[in-house]
Length: 277
Length: 351
Picture (cartoon, rainbow over the protein chains, first blue to last red):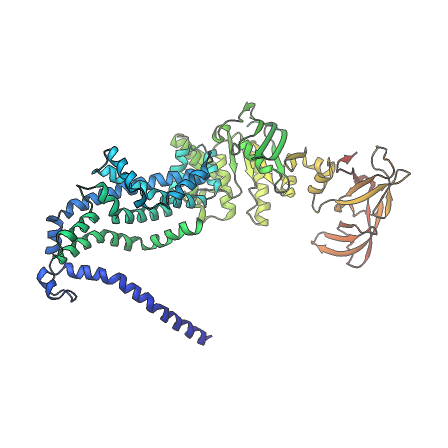
């Protein structure tokens, strides 16, 4: 018994090596960015891989003010919050309908939504842009919020539908007999019971919206979001790596914080969709 | 309180008809039980009364009002589900008051009704708990409480005791019967358990394959079944059926003996019929005697079930209270002429 335990432990240690390498490859760029964002331009040129000696917050101040990251940050926050709220409400309503209600062409509709998951954003860029221009939604927050909602909705609906399909039908039937109208059933039964999935979905959508460059680049050409702004910094300040890395840290910080807080939810939530699909 | 009437109702899922032209009326204040094997359409019928399934054809009347096209909430019914269907995120009190809150009833009225139901069901100490913190029996009582507070005209129960263990089931059976006496509402109860049906019902509706086989008081179904299916389904262990051939003199040859025709109907010699005798009636000291060899004996304490083989090769079960034979022995299983029930080739009763 003891021998088997030892052998197992050895196997685990060997398996840990590639894991550790993977971990380092993920963490090093973050370390590189944080480390260099604290250096002056001069210090960076002297030693770009060494640890920071005289830390300074100058780069952050400069990026925030001179490079308009404050405005970009605000744009990202507005677009992300708006889209996440809209996505949550719409996907939970749609998931409720697709999972629990009976109406004609329900399965067909679900398949259409699923199949739109398979279409990459790039394929529909031209018709998408023409639509946005025609609706005068270019360079507006509303336009960006609607775009994010449209692009991330299929996955959200899919996930909420599979989650709600796992709930017992009797709960909805009991509510119906109790005299709850459809929207009341949704609000009093489906939303509270769907909370685990909705929170996870909210986090995943926050990541997607916050990290998006392509859609924002097209939709908000004059008024950039943070990710677009950071990409642009690369061109404008290619010799100012510390300033650039400070921008990266500002952009990544909210997501990293969110991830640390909701770590468990993110992992378990991805499994929710996987198991019950 | 109201009577419930089904007029020629049918239900199809796609092209499969699961309930065929059922007409039935359940009187005001009656405790009616729908019983039958799984897939007989009893739950579907109940759900049609509740409005959870659309009625493909026919009409559903509750209290002389045609509710066929009404929403479940507008029918004046409350339902208790097999899975309880309690809202897991709400406290017991919130679960019970859900229906009243949804219809925007005044707060004092809600509080009063919940308190009253909690008192009836002895749930006062659990009002603030979540369903997950309750035992199966308590959850069941909350589900019943949720029905009571709505003051429905008709209570519908869909196999409410199936998820409980045997002991609790017996206890809840008694409590439900008491509750019915106290409230006096019309109740319709679905079960596949004939014991529940016999013990609780004012009237039993036996269903098979979407058809009503017989409707009647428990004692009538037990003593005077309309057909071999009802005779076999009601009563436990089930009735023994022996192949009976009509002899030239009008007597019946069954199980190795000859039996007088128990009916006033003249039977054509050569007909092959079914003769039914209940296990509990094979414990007489005189009457007809079946010569049987005992295969094995199930001891149940006060009584035992004797599984035996007849000279014809047919097996029968006899319930024995006093003298209990052992396996391998021969025994004479006696039954009174009055306990014989005769069924035709198609299963219909010959009276």
